[in-house]
Length: 195
Image 1 (cartoon, helix red, strand yellow):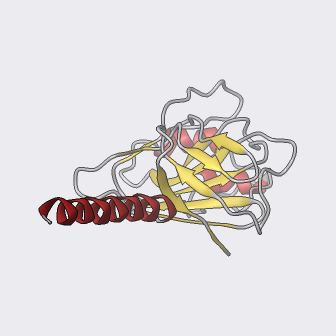
Image 2: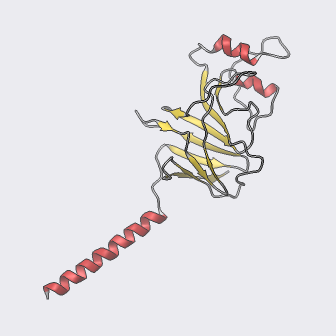
Image 3: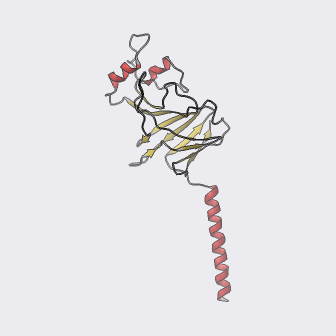
């Protein structure tokens, strides 16, 4: 009798374990502090690392119609220069706007107090943040690089918005695409919400 009860208990435990594994596969745990939405052109990641947490974003994977990796970016972009690129690392609240298109600057970059001036000469979707009220001055053609050299020591110079470009000639997703954001190891971070 004891052998029959033991066999029944083992079968029940096995069924329970199989059910838990199947549930885990269809309901993956998402990373806290990451929200994600998209339209036909851009993916917008809102990141809120908790105290002491750091998000190393370069190398994260965007899995939609095509798989793409989030590249490195320039922390301080300049016009007419070869911009140094490095990994995107966030330790405080920030926004990352990912476009499948080519960068108007030729590089992915972090926005700063002066980048809003670039809206005057190039098309950005969405437009860059305009946060420097005195940067334009009286000139019809303000100099972005001059603004950077003038203000880069200001405590409010760097914004926590990054513009990432995947440099594709064709769309990598549509508004109806189901997109997943994965970390460097392929673990799910978030699923997109269409706008």
